[in-house]
Image 1 (cartoon, helix red, strand yellow):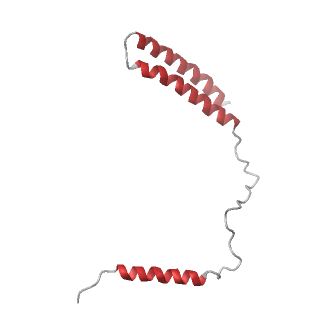
Image 2 (spheres, helix red, strand yellow; image 1 turned 90 degrees about the vertical axis):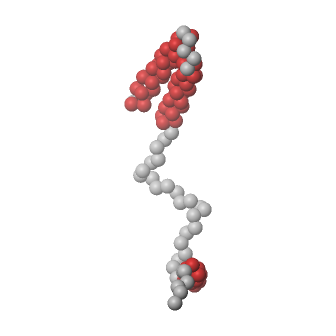
Image 3 (spheres, one colour; image 1 turned 180 degrees about the vertical axis):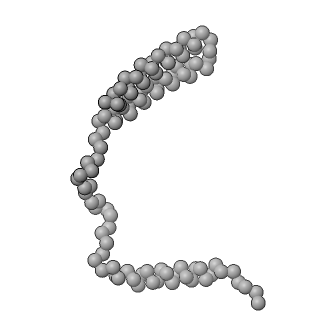
Length: 105
């Protein structure tokens, strides 16, 4: 209900501002020509967002979302990758050792 009230107030207000800017532009205010096109754009955007909010269903918090097929499932054996992890940790340790500044004695 609040969205409907907002759109009922916003669109006529933006239309009135557009008419006001047209009158100012025709009276010689050149800057008002930019606003002549800006207020209808704002009104159109407000209608577009109102339409999306009204017709877009919020997610159902009770029903869980289905699992994605592209997300890999964890393996049943957590120690299966220990060798790869140890090799990677050794590689990182070697890189860290190379980056240490040499100390002069």
